[in-house]
Length: 156
Image 1 (cartoon, rainbow, N blue to C red):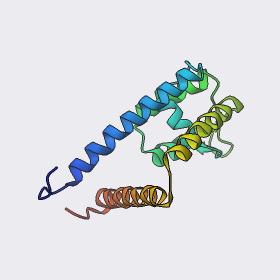
Image 2 (tube, rainbow, N blue to C red):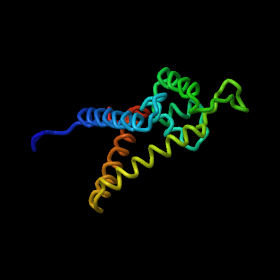
Image 3 (cartoon, rainbow, N blue to C red):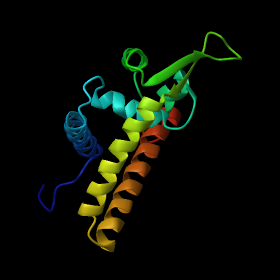
């Protein structure tokens, strides 16, 4: 972009989408290095969204902003591959509860260790660390702005 170009929300969203695809490509490479071929990069992201919590499927959809049919397919794959335990809720038998299995926790720990190492190699000084904090904060504000626009019609 030239100095007099205006960066719009559309360009930012497209950049976020491309960066997300590149990140999934990196996860795919890491899974290959870990000899893990029974899970996709998108499914790994679901595992990180569940984390140490026990979630309902609805909570997972809201927390991760997943589409219902896509999440349902990926959850079934994760349950079948032994990464997620899916049990009926004690309060409402129609509602499923999700929790990571030890297999999933181990995979997440291994991937987190890889990313911690990459982070240490790429964040060379305080300025790099501040840039990451700034990028995170800007993206978080965009997320909140866009969420508010959806919920309350702000910005229309």
